[in-house]
Image (cartoon, rainbow, N blue to C red; front, side, top):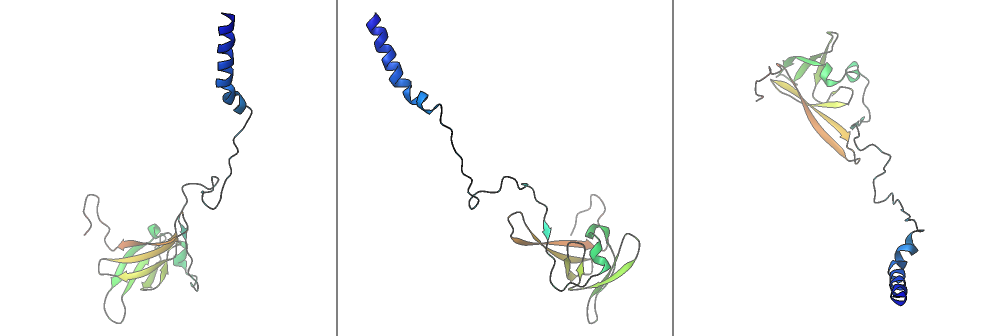
Length: 147
């Protein structure tokens, strides 16, 4: 009986030796900034507007596009024009190529029903993207479908 107990103890000792051997060790994690995302940067990042070179300061660059209201469109003649109104009721004439809004949107097209504005921005990865925003002359009522 005593001998069996010794054999069991020796077998258990050799079986558990790797477990006891690794108890004092700690794993060392190495952060590689080339392949992994910085854990301290927020996952959700606000889109960064890109300020084009040579933009002339204008009162229209102070407002967000949502604060501007399209009130008139003049199509025909030499060039199409539109008029936007700020929250204070002051009107501004815009043409194709003009910059508008605090995110430096550029007037891309003036149609009979609205104005298309293109904004360039950097996404979360740093790539330059563009998005189009349409200011309608007659904003749709709730429930109406846009054309």
